[in-house]
Image 1 (cartoon, rainbow, N blue to C red):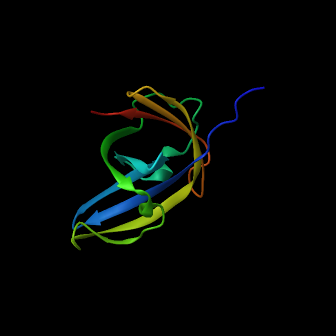
Image 2: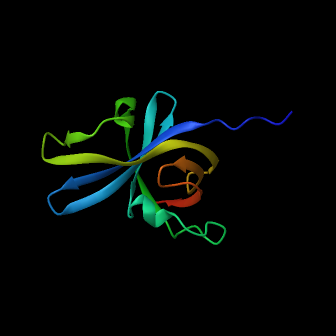
Image 3: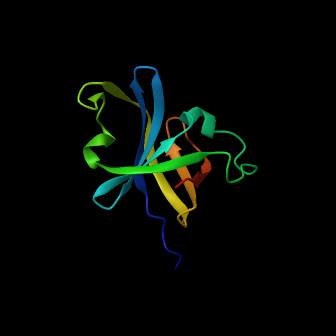
Length: 120
């Protein structure tokens, strides 16, 4: 019998701090949310994923977050910025080799596979 995929919860926060706007992808990983800073909002990750090549979507690993951020929206960074949930749902990890993260998303915005090039 084939192993069933492990479904993980994910959330994407839009962080705003003055003129700085970025997005954090957080995926449930054991007791924490493994987190990557994205260059683009989730709607830019959608499209023809059969033709999406590594390097089109880049992400930088940042500090893991507590699971409370799956539902948190509000002030962050000691009140100097805000976080807003822009997508959430479940996902399965197809590949994580430290350089490429291949994820099947089932969220409100992301409903396909994404291939993410992990920056160091």
